[in-house]
Amino acid sequence: MQEKSIIFDNSSYVCLSKVPLNPISRLAPTPSGFLHLGNAVNFLVTWAIVRSRKGRLHLRIDDMDGIRFRPDVLEDIFTSLHWLGLDWDTGPAGPDDFYQNFSLHKKKEYYRSRLQALNKTGKNTFVCRCSRASIKKISPSGLYPGTCRNAGLAFEPGCNAVRLKVDNDACIQVNNQRIGLASALGDFVLWRKDDQPSYHLASLLEDEEGGINFIVRGQDLLFSTAAQIHLARCFGFSSFPACRFIHHGLVLGENGEKLSKSRGAYALKDLRQSGGSFANVVQAAARILGLKHDTICTAQDLRHALNSLNRQNTFFKPA
Image (cartoon, rainbow, N blue to C red; front, side, top):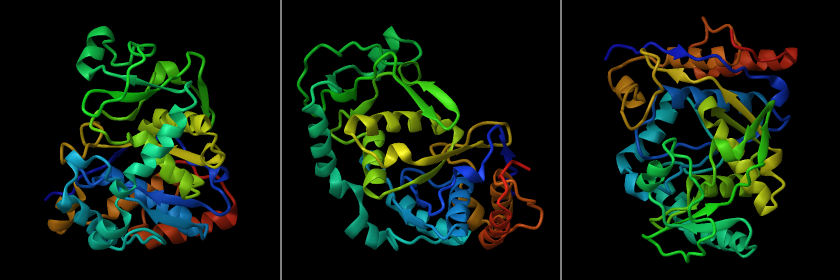
């Protein structure tokens, strides 16, 4: 396999002042498609920052999307992380440990109970029967138009979902950017029609419970961050709204397209099995961190270079 070149969208920058002195973060892959170069860059950036600050890193595998769960992808997650040279402090050691002790499916009723507590307030949630197709007919942008807000429906698995009401004036500050949540996401789903918690609900509850205070994400998840901060405030949480976030520029394909696990392009599995090198992936992470990347080829190189920046107490800016 010919080594893929990486195009880096460096529209954002990473600043040392956004990193807590004792970061607690997580790697959160989903076992629905093989990890790609963009996932690897994000994991390397997260790992290097946490390790350089002597923080704590948790591995959380988000397997709530049961329909798309793939055991071969789960196994590949561990293989790929070890191949990249990454370790973690808490979380599953391998697939068997994950199935026995860390699958989020085991916590479904916990997620349900937390949502039910939110529902009892009577102000934040409502049941919605709209399909994506019906929403699209009314709202070409796909933004939910509020059809069922006042319908008073009862939840029935397989028939409807639960959404969070987002007021028109809801505005969330993420770093230096103010996001109007109503126009960005609208009333978003908390519990899906297939009787599973949504990504926003499960991810937030896990981060709050784990005391996560630092999260690195791609710029494409900025609206998701805003949604989860808003949801955390609805729950009355104090930890997650105080979390520090870094949203870095995306790693793009050769034609400038966003990488996608569903398309299978740029998969680490293919690169690894063809005997390819991950040096360009590490160097892309180094560029995000503002490091001189020509001599950085491994995760340990990245960590050592970042240690030097920490000692200088400088800003991280794209090189």
